[in-house]
Length: 294
Image 1 (cartoon, rainbow, N blue to C red):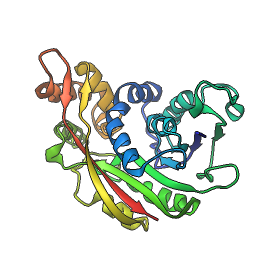
Image 2 (tube, helix red, strand yellow; image 1 turned 180 degrees about the horizontal axis):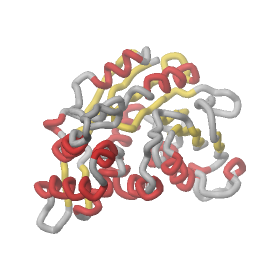
Image 3 (cartoon, rainbow, N blue to C red; image 1 turned 90 degrees about the vertical axis):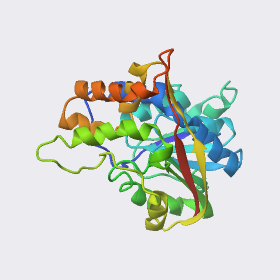
Protein backbone atom coordinates (compact mmCIF):
# COMPACT_ATOMS: atom_id res chain seq x y z
CA UNK A 1 0.00 0.00 0.00
CA UNK A 2 1.40 3.35 -0.99
CA UNK A 3 0.09 6.53 0.62
CA UNK A 4 1.19 9.60 -1.28
CA UNK A 5 0.56 13.22 -0.37
CA UNK A 6 0.61 15.91 -3.03
CA UNK A 7 0.32 19.66 -2.52
CA UNK A 8 -2.02 21.20 -5.07
CA UNK A 9 -4.07 24.38 -5.35
CA UNK A 10 -7.78 23.65 -4.92
CA UNK A 11 -8.92 27.18 -4.25
CA UNK A 12 -6.66 28.03 -1.28
CA UNK A 13 -7.94 30.95 0.80
CA UNK A 14 -5.32 33.69 1.03
CA UNK A 15 -7.11 35.21 4.02
CA UNK A 16 -6.92 32.07 6.18
CA UNK A 17 -6.89 32.91 9.89
CA UNK A 18 -3.62 33.28 11.79
CA UNK A 19 -4.44 30.23 13.94
CA UNK A 20 -4.51 27.93 10.91
CA UNK A 21 -2.56 25.26 12.80
CA UNK A 22 -5.09 25.18 15.64
CA UNK A 23 -7.99 25.05 13.22
CA UNK A 24 -6.40 22.17 11.31
CA UNK A 25 -5.98 20.24 14.56
CA UNK A 26 -9.60 20.93 15.48
CA UNK A 27 -10.60 19.53 12.09
CA UNK A 28 -8.47 16.41 12.53
CA UNK A 29 -9.33 15.76 16.17
CA UNK A 30 -13.01 16.78 16.25
CA UNK A 31 -14.71 17.28 12.90
CA UNK A 32 -13.20 14.98 10.29
CA UNK A 33 -14.42 11.80 12.00
CA UNK A 34 -18.03 12.94 11.56
CA UNK A 35 -17.73 11.92 7.91
CA UNK A 36 -16.38 8.42 8.63
CA UNK A 37 -19.75 6.76 7.83
CA UNK A 38 -19.61 8.43 4.41
CA UNK A 39 -16.12 7.08 3.74
CA UNK A 40 -17.11 3.56 4.77
CA UNK A 41 -20.32 3.58 2.71
CA UNK A 42 -18.48 4.69 -0.43
CA UNK A 43 -15.68 2.16 0.07
CA UNK A 44 -18.17 -0.66 0.62
CA UNK A 45 -20.02 0.22 -2.57
CA UNK A 46 -16.79 0.59 -4.56
CA UNK A 47 -15.33 -2.60 -3.03
CA UNK A 48 -12.13 -0.76 -2.15
CA UNK A 49 -9.24 -3.17 -1.56
CA UNK A 50 -5.78 -4.18 -2.72
CA UNK A 51 -6.63 -3.62 -6.39
CA UNK A 52 -7.69 -0.02 -5.74
CA UNK A 53 -5.45 2.88 -6.79
CA UNK A 54 -7.20 5.88 -5.32
CA UNK A 55 -6.66 9.60 -5.77
CA UNK A 56 -8.27 11.67 -3.00
CA UNK A 57 -8.85 15.30 -4.01
CA UNK A 58 -9.11 17.57 -0.97
CA UNK A 59 -7.75 14.83 1.30
CA UNK A 60 -7.73 17.03 4.42
CA UNK A 61 -5.82 15.51 7.32
CA UNK A 62 -5.94 12.06 5.77
CA UNK A 63 -8.56 10.04 7.65
CA UNK A 64 -10.31 8.87 4.47
CA UNK A 65 -6.95 7.86 3.02
CA UNK A 66 -6.05 5.95 6.18
CA UNK A 67 -9.33 4.03 6.06
CA UNK A 68 -8.78 3.12 2.39
CA UNK A 69 -5.17 2.11 3.00
CA UNK A 70 -6.26 -0.13 5.87
CA UNK A 71 -8.43 -1.95 3.30
CA UNK A 72 -5.34 -2.51 1.16
CA UNK A 73 -5.71 0.36 -1.31
CA UNK A 74 -2.85 2.40 -2.78
CA UNK A 75 -3.76 6.00 -1.98
CA UNK A 76 -2.64 9.43 -3.13
CA UNK A 77 -3.88 12.62 -1.49
CA UNK A 78 -4.09 16.20 -2.73
CA UNK A 79 -4.93 19.25 -0.61
CA UNK A 80 -4.24 22.98 -0.65
CA UNK A 81 -4.27 23.36 3.15
CA UNK A 82 -0.66 23.13 4.36
CA UNK A 83 -1.62 22.53 7.99
CA UNK A 84 -4.10 19.75 7.25
CA UNK A 85 -1.62 18.15 4.88
CA UNK A 86 1.05 18.20 7.61
CA UNK A 87 -1.32 16.29 9.88
CA UNK A 88 -2.04 13.80 7.09
CA UNK A 89 1.71 13.34 6.74
CA UNK A 90 1.98 12.55 10.44
CA UNK A 91 -0.80 9.98 10.13
CA UNK A 92 0.32 8.25 6.96
CA UNK A 93 4.03 9.02 6.66
CA UNK A 94 5.21 9.38 10.25
CA UNK A 95 8.87 8.44 9.83
CA UNK A 96 11.75 10.57 8.61
CA UNK A 97 12.50 8.10 5.81
CA UNK A 98 9.15 8.46 4.07
CA UNK A 99 10.44 7.18 0.74
CA UNK A 100 12.06 4.07 2.23
CA UNK A 101 9.75 2.82 4.96
CA UNK A 102 10.97 -0.67 5.99
CA UNK A 103 9.13 -3.63 4.56
CA UNK A 104 8.80 -5.05 8.08
CA UNK A 105 6.94 -1.92 9.25
CA UNK A 106 4.16 -2.81 11.73
CA UNK A 107 1.92 -0.39 9.81
CA UNK A 108 1.42 -1.88 6.31
CA UNK A 109 -0.46 1.23 5.17
CA UNK A 110 2.77 3.22 5.58
CA UNK A 111 5.11 1.03 3.48
CA UNK A 112 6.88 2.38 0.37
CA UNK A 113 5.42 5.84 0.97
CA UNK A 114 6.11 8.58 -1.58
CA UNK A 115 5.80 12.30 -0.97
CA UNK A 116 5.30 14.67 -3.90
CA UNK A 117 5.27 18.16 -2.45
CA UNK A 118 4.28 20.35 -5.39
CA UNK A 119 2.51 20.32 -8.71
CA UNK A 120 -0.43 18.43 -10.18
CA UNK A 121 -1.36 14.89 -9.14
CA UNK A 122 1.08 12.26 -10.36
CA UNK A 123 0.34 8.74 -11.64
CA UNK A 124 -0.63 6.25 -8.95
CA UNK A 125 2.65 4.38 -9.00
CA UNK A 126 6.28 5.02 -9.79
CA UNK A 127 5.76 2.84 -12.88
CA UNK A 128 3.15 5.28 -14.17
CA UNK A 129 0.19 3.04 -13.35
CA UNK A 130 -3.13 4.94 -13.52
CA UNK A 131 -5.80 5.44 -10.87
CA UNK A 132 -9.06 3.53 -10.98
CA UNK A 133 -10.87 5.55 -8.28
CA UNK A 134 -10.99 9.31 -7.67
CA UNK A 135 -12.76 10.57 -4.57
CA UNK A 136 -13.84 14.01 -3.37
CA UNK A 137 -14.80 13.67 0.29
CA UNK A 138 -14.83 17.39 1.05
CA UNK A 139 -18.61 17.92 0.87
CA UNK A 140 -19.79 20.52 -1.61
CA UNK A 141 -23.09 22.29 -1.89
CA UNK A 142 -23.42 24.59 1.12
CA UNK A 143 -20.86 27.34 0.43
CA UNK A 144 -20.76 29.83 -2.43
CA UNK A 145 -18.11 28.87 -4.99
CA UNK A 146 -17.09 25.67 -3.21
CA UNK A 147 -16.90 23.77 -6.50
CA UNK A 148 -15.05 26.33 -8.60
CA UNK A 149 -11.60 24.92 -7.87
CA UNK A 150 -12.86 21.36 -7.96
CA UNK A 151 -13.93 21.29 -11.61
CA UNK A 152 -10.47 22.11 -13.03
CA UNK A 153 -8.89 19.74 -10.49
CA UNK A 154 -11.11 16.93 -11.73
CA UNK A 155 -10.28 17.75 -15.33
CA UNK A 156 -6.57 17.53 -14.48
CA UNK A 157 -6.97 14.28 -12.58
CA UNK A 158 -9.12 12.32 -15.04
CA UNK A 159 -6.32 11.83 -17.64
CA UNK A 160 -4.32 10.06 -14.90
CA UNK A 161 -7.08 7.46 -14.45
CA UNK A 162 -7.94 4.38 -16.48
CA UNK A 163 -10.68 4.67 -19.05
CA UNK A 164 -14.00 4.14 -17.29
CA UNK A 165 -12.56 4.88 -13.84
CA UNK A 166 -14.96 5.70 -11.02
CA UNK A 167 -15.21 9.21 -9.62
CA UNK A 168 -17.16 9.80 -6.39
CA UNK A 169 -18.38 13.28 -5.49
CA UNK A 170 -19.91 14.02 -2.08
CA UNK A 171 -22.11 16.78 -0.72
CA UNK A 172 -24.56 17.80 1.96
CA UNK A 173 -28.03 16.34 1.83
CA UNK A 174 -31.27 18.34 1.76
CA UNK A 175 -31.31 21.10 4.42
CA UNK A 176 -34.47 19.65 5.93
CA UNK A 177 -32.55 16.40 6.57
CA UNK A 178 -29.51 18.15 8.08
CA UNK A 179 -29.86 19.58 11.60
CA UNK A 180 -26.53 21.35 11.16
CA UNK A 181 -28.02 23.51 8.38
CA UNK A 182 -29.83 25.60 11.00
CA UNK A 183 -26.53 26.31 12.75
CA UNK A 184 -24.78 27.11 9.50
CA UNK A 185 -27.37 29.79 8.80
CA UNK A 186 -25.65 31.78 11.55
CA UNK A 187 -22.69 32.09 9.20
CA UNK A 188 -24.81 33.65 6.45
CA UNK A 189 -26.58 36.03 8.81
CA UNK A 190 -23.35 37.32 10.35
CA UNK A 191 -21.64 37.59 6.96
CA UNK A 192 -24.50 39.87 5.88
CA UNK A 193 -23.52 42.38 8.58
CA UNK A 194 -20.51 43.41 6.48
CA UNK A 195 -20.79 46.97 5.17
CA UNK A 196 -21.34 47.04 2.31
CA UNK A 197 -22.86 43.54 2.16
CA UNK A 198 -20.97 41.34 -0.23
CA UNK A 199 -21.14 37.86 -1.67
CA UNK A 200 -17.84 36.04 -1.49
CA UNK A 201 -16.52 32.49 -1.93
CA UNK A 202 -17.03 30.33 1.14
CA UNK A 203 -20.19 32.10 2.31
CA UNK A 204 -22.90 29.64 3.39
CA UNK A 205 -25.85 29.00 1.07
CA UNK A 206 -28.60 26.37 1.05
CA UNK A 207 -27.73 23.08 -0.62
CA UNK A 208 -29.30 22.62 -4.07
CA UNK A 209 -30.70 19.33 -5.31
CA UNK A 210 -28.42 19.09 -8.36
CA UNK A 211 -25.17 20.46 -6.92
CA UNK A 212 -23.25 17.22 -7.50
CA UNK A 213 -24.74 16.62 -10.95
CA UNK A 214 -23.76 20.17 -11.94
CA UNK A 215 -20.11 19.54 -10.97
CA UNK A 216 -20.12 16.22 -12.83
CA UNK A 217 -21.48 17.84 -15.99
CA UNK A 218 -18.92 20.66 -15.93
CA UNK A 219 -16.09 18.18 -15.37
CA UNK A 220 -17.23 15.94 -18.24
CA UNK A 221 -18.21 13.01 -16.00
CA UNK A 222 -21.13 10.62 -16.53
CA UNK A 223 -23.33 9.97 -13.45
CA UNK A 224 -23.77 6.28 -12.70
CA UNK A 225 -25.65 6.05 -9.41
CA UNK A 226 -25.92 7.79 -6.07
CA UNK A 227 -26.56 7.18 -2.42
CA UNK A 228 -27.34 8.85 0.91
CA UNK A 229 -25.57 8.23 4.20
CA UNK A 230 -26.47 9.23 7.74
CA UNK A 231 -23.62 11.22 9.28
CA UNK A 232 -24.72 12.58 12.66
CA UNK A 233 -22.47 15.22 14.21
CA UNK A 234 -21.84 14.31 17.85
CA UNK A 235 -19.70 16.35 20.25
CA UNK A 236 -18.68 16.00 23.89
CA UNK A 237 -19.91 19.51 24.70
CA UNK A 238 -20.85 22.84 23.11
CA UNK A 239 -17.27 24.09 23.19
CA UNK A 240 -16.06 21.11 21.15
CA UNK A 241 -18.95 21.57 18.74
CA UNK A 242 -18.07 25.23 18.17
CA UNK A 243 -14.41 24.39 17.55
CA UNK A 244 -15.30 21.57 15.19
CA UNK A 245 -17.79 23.58 13.15
CA UNK A 246 -15.49 26.59 12.83
CA UNK A 247 -12.71 24.29 11.61
CA UNK A 248 -14.74 23.58 8.45
CA UNK A 249 -14.10 27.07 7.08
CA UNK A 250 -17.82 27.66 6.55
CA UNK A 251 -17.78 30.47 9.13
CA UNK A 252 -14.75 32.34 7.75
CA UNK A 253 -16.83 34.98 5.96
CA UNK A 254 -18.76 35.59 9.19
CA UNK A 255 -15.52 36.00 11.15
CA UNK A 256 -14.24 38.53 8.61
CA UNK A 257 -17.52 40.46 8.77
CA UNK A 258 -17.66 40.55 12.59
CA UNK A 259 -15.08 38.87 14.82
CA UNK A 260 -14.34 35.35 16.01
CA UNK A 261 -15.67 35.84 19.55
CA UNK A 262 -19.07 36.98 18.27
CA UNK A 263 -19.26 34.06 15.85
CA UNK A 264 -18.36 31.59 18.59
CA UNK A 265 -21.01 33.09 20.90
CA UNK A 266 -23.81 32.94 18.32
CA UNK A 267 -22.90 29.45 17.13
CA UNK A 268 -22.97 28.26 20.74
CA UNK A 269 -26.46 29.75 21.16
CA UNK A 270 -27.64 28.08 17.93
CA UNK A 271 -26.45 24.72 19.27
CA UNK A 272 -28.61 24.83 22.40
CA UNK A 273 -31.58 22.97 20.81
CA UNK A 274 -29.24 20.06 20.05
CA UNK A 275 -27.65 19.82 23.49
CA UNK A 276 -28.62 16.80 25.58
CA UNK A 277 -29.08 16.64 29.33
CA UNK A 278 -25.56 15.24 29.79
CA UNK A 279 -24.08 18.23 27.93
CA UNK A 280 -23.31 16.41 24.70
CA UNK A 281 -24.41 17.81 21.34
CA UNK A 282 -26.12 15.62 18.73
CA UNK A 283 -27.21 16.75 15.25
CA UNK A 284 -28.56 14.21 12.75
CA UNK A 285 -27.44 14.85 9.17
CA UNK A 286 -27.65 13.16 5.79
CA UNK A 287 -24.90 13.38 3.21
CA UNK A 288 -25.15 12.41 -0.44
CA UNK A 289 -22.65 10.89 -2.86
CA UNK A 290 -22.71 10.68 -6.65
CA UNK A 291 -20.93 7.87 -8.48
CA UNK A 292 -19.59 8.88 -11.91
CA UNK A 293 -17.45 7.30 -14.60
CA UNK A 294 -14.78 8.94 -16.72
